[in-house]
Every structure is written in structure tokens, then in C-alpha cells.
Amino acid sequence: MTNDDVSKTLILDMDGDDLQELSEYLDVLSSSTRLRILKAIERRPKDIRQISSEIETSYENTRKHINKLLSIGVVRKEAGLSRPTARGVRPVWKYSLVPGGLEMITRNLGLFANLKLTLTDAVLAEKLAGVRETFSGEFSGQLPVLILLGGAEDGKVFPLRHETIAIGRVDPDAPGRPDHDDEILLGDDYAAVTRISRPHARLTRRDDTWFIEDCGSTGGTFVNGTQLDRGRRQELHDGDLIELAKGAPGATLVFVVPGEVLPSDAA
Image (cartoon, rainbow, N blue to C red):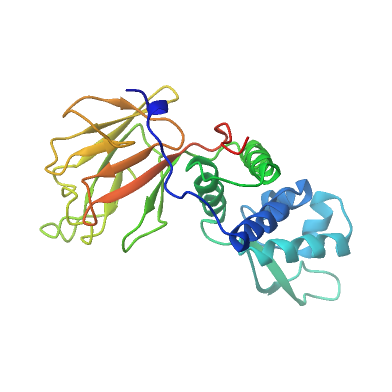
């Protein structure tokens, strides 16, 4: 059985209010000017005059676009000081990306696009695919991620930065264990997931392809509902659902590759 033979659908439909909110969110991100603003403030905070100069548009137009980005929670503002002039410096508002802001956008777009939600509006589905592709093109350095679904850490995003990454539950017998970004550590609420000292599963990358394998866990590892044999590597595709053990004490994650857009179901 291939991945395409297994339904990945978690949600059958969205109500009208959710569809409207998604449409408004996509409207904010569909502007090339706003994406240029995000790039301008990606590394350090800047005031509106600095941003407008960098993206070569007017002060008032920049302010209008900044307010739209503030409305979806991806940008924050805080007091700072202007550049020194002959008359000194003055207080100004400076704007920066919220911590993890780009990952948050990747998460939001990836969940809506890759869980094959039944979008009743085909135009909205097309807009979602277009915004996701454009965003990924502008921020081409975005890493594939795993997004945790459900439980105490619902929505947590794990960027995949290394070629080999172990996945497991925190080990209370090693409280001094430092966090490593080559490990995905889940809280003890996910009791059916094997501790990281004997990983539940392992991710590996070969060229641009990612694989997952079960490491002899008690609860098993499932990809799109199919259990993996111990030690057998399974290739992962954008939108695949990974279950570490079944049921509430386990953990469900979705694999998201920025820039890969699955065909829409809303034909």
C-alpha cells in the first residue's frame, strides 16, 4: 500500500467562520510588499522609515502593510531609538518578527494545505496553494518541520536541522540532559512514546529525501495508519501523518515540507 492509498484527512470540513478567517489570513500573506517587509525585519528590528527605505515604498504605504501583518500576529512592535542625527536620537516604534514567526506561517499554511481539508470554495483552495508556494519561494531557506498535533504541546513545531534526528519522550532519569536540536523531545504527557534514551523512532535524510524508522518501540510507529516494521525505513512525503503509538497517550505529528504543494481536493 502506498501513501496515496491512505487518506490523510483529519477534518472533513470547515465552517463558514473558519473559511472566512482563512481567507483573510491568506489575503494578508498574498501581498509581495508584505513579504518583502518580513524579509527586511527578519534579522533585526527596524522602524517604519528604515523599512520603507529598504523596500522602496512610501512611509504611509509601509505603515498600512505593517498594520496588516500585526493583525495576524506575525510581527510585533516595541519602543526603540532612531538612528543618530545632528539633533540626537528620538524614541520610535521598531518592528520585528515574533520569535518563530516564519515557522508559525509554515505551520499554519502546511496544516491547511497538507491535511487535505475539504475546502468547499475551490477559489480559496487555489489561493491557499498560491500563497504557500510564494511564501516558500521568498523564504527558500525554510526547513522541513514536524508539527505536533494534540496533547499538552499541541502545535509545537520541530524544524529538522540535522541528517539524523532521534524522537522520544523526555527521560526523567536524566534530568540534567541538555536539549539538542538533533533530538525531538516530547513531554511526559505522551506516556506511550518511548523515552529518548532508547528512541521511539528516528528520522534520517538522504540527499533531499527524509525517512523514518521505528527503533523497537513498545507502542509502534505508524505512517498514515500503516505500522512500520522495526528497522525498516519509510520514505516521508509532504503531509504524511506520523503516529508514535496509538491513542491519547501517544503522539501524532505531521511532516511538512515548505514549498511542496499537494493537489487540492476542492476540484
